[in-house]
Amino acid sequence: MSDGILDEAYERLHRTGPEYDGWLSNHGPMAVEALARHGHQQRVHRWLDDYLGRLDDLPRGLHPIDDWRAALGDEKRAGDWLAYFDRQLREHPWRDVLGTWWPRLLPGIAAGATHGVIRVGHAVRALEADDTNPRRITELAQALGYWAARWQPVPGADRLLDGPSVDPGELDVDAALAGVPRIDDQTGGVRDRLGQLAGVPRWDPALTALRPARTPAEAQQGLTTLVHRAGLNYLRYGHASPVMLVHAVTAPTAVLRTLPALDRALWAPSLAAAWAATAAMTSVYAPTAGIAPPTVTTATPAEVFARAARHGDEHVVKLADAVLDAHAASGDERLLAAAGYAGQLI
Image 1 (tube, rainbow, N blue to C red):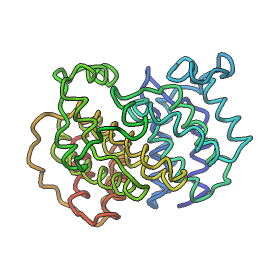
Image 2 (image 1 turned 30 degrees about the vertical axis):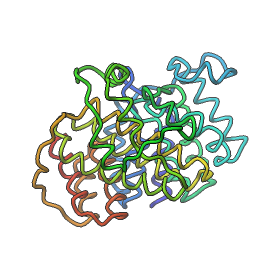
Image 3 (image 1 turned 90 degrees about the horizontal axis):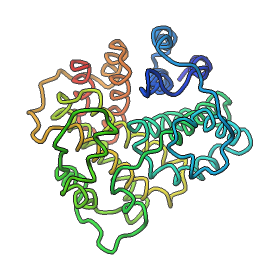
C-alpha cells in the first residue's frame, strides 16, 4: 500500500461529513482504503475527484458529549460525536479507545445500514499497517463517531450479546443462515425494513439458532464462515437488491478484520453481532427463493479487483475487497464471481 496516497486521500475526505443527501453514507474512506490496499493507488485521487462533489461538509457540533448513553443513535449529535472521538484518540492509544468503545457500539451494529462498523473495519486495517499515523487515527475517530451517531440495534440481538444463554442455539452458520425468514414488505428504506423484524414470528428463533462461539478460535472461524456463506448468497440473491445485499458480506468482513486489535474476550460477542447484522440484511432484502448462481467468468484475484476498480462503484469495490479476503481464507473460486456479478448488477 502506498502510505502517502492513502493519507492524502484521508486528508481530503476528513473535511467532509459521514453522510450526504439525507443519510446516505460517505463511502469515500472505505473505497480509497480498498483501492490503495490492492495496489490501485493511481486511481485513488481520480476516483475522489468524481466522488467528493456529492459529499456534505463536516457537521458542526451542538455541545460536548457528556451522557454518552443518551447520545447514542442521535444523528443530530454527529458533529459532537466526531469531536468526542477526535479528542479521545488524541489523548489515548487507539487500541485502548477501540477496546473501550467496541462493546458499547457493537449492540448498535445496524448503524447507517452497517456502514458504521464497515468504516471502522477499514480504518483498523489501515492502522494495523501504520499504527501511529495521525491521518489514520483521525479516520478511526470519524468512523467511531459515525457509528455512535447512527447507533441502531438489530431487533432481538440484545439477547445474543448479553452473555451465555440458558438455551443456546445449535445450528452452524450455513444452517442458521438458510433458516432466516423474510419480512413480508420489502419496500422502503433500511430503517423501516429493520423495524418490521420484531413482528416476524420466526425472526427470534432464527436469530438465536446459531451455535454461540465457546472460544475465541470458534468465533474467528464462525466469522470466516459467515463471510464465506454471505458471499455465496450474493450470487443467489444479489439480483433482488444489488447494493444493499453487499452489506451482508462487508459487515461481517469488517468485524473479522477488527478482531486482531481487540481483546480476545470480545471475539465471541463480535461474532454474535456480525451474525445479527448479516441475518437482518438477508431478511429485509433477500427474496425467499434464490436463483441459480449466474455464470460469471472468473479470473485471478488481482484481476477480479482490477475489474472492480475499473468499474468504479464504491459497492463493487468494497465487495471485491471482501470476497478476496474470503477467497484467500477458503480457496473457494466461486467467491470471486460475486464481485463480477455485482459489477453487472450495479
